[in-house]
Image (tube, rainbow, N blue to C red):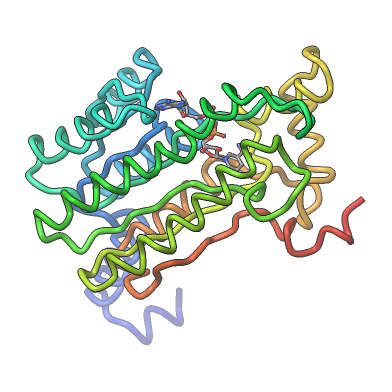
Length: 286
Ligand code: NAD
């Protein structure tokens, strides 16, 4: 205190505090964002953090009750949207345009987990169902978000949720892994085309976040009696190099805000892995 009092006058300190506040909490003021799969889990935490940072958020999901409740609590809008249906996704993007006249950010995050099965006995209807949501859902979302951004001339940021399972084998079911690897390829080609218009396209790849999806995944392999606490303990014990810590939905949401904000204006075609080092150092984990 003595140091600051002697070196800086009061208005400097006031400005510093204000700038720090705006830097950390208001990085998306006036931005308009659509979040698919925003009713719960990673999407819900991100929708919340976008709103806390000053963005107008449209939550697009199939969980109408949870989505509406969240939207009401953060001043967002909710729309029923099954990302496997192109017309639903188009309507979600259109809602942002009708509401605020532009689209700055797409967080294309909706996804489902797969059913474990040998490659030799895959049920092709299940594969197609998963791909229609996890992969084609992203195609629909990028297509219509890019159209809207081009029409409104916004230098937007598109972020898709891939996964550590898109990088490594053996972490999840075959269709899930193929869908998540496909998202990274799609993100790169979209980034190549849209970069010339100033639109950035990136992925985030989380790993081991104890959400409903991960808990269901563990139950599939370990039995239905597996509790959320056990899943949390398993991922904190073995899920990263940062032993004793499980990833949180907020950890992932912070990464999405980072890529959505203008702070990352020169980052595109990037896959930001949020895994506590897991995919880089599997051999040191037991
Ligand atoms: P979650 O199940 O809590 O959330 C998924 C959300 O997507 C839900 O709100 C759900 O209703 C919505 N959704 C599902 N199908 C939809 C559809 N057809 N149309 C629109 N919305 C739909 O799980 P989560 O862990 O928060 O998953 C979010 C994303 O993160 C997913 O893409 C998932 O694959 C990915 N991911 C999660 C983890 C993890 O460890 N939890 C790791 C890597 C990647």
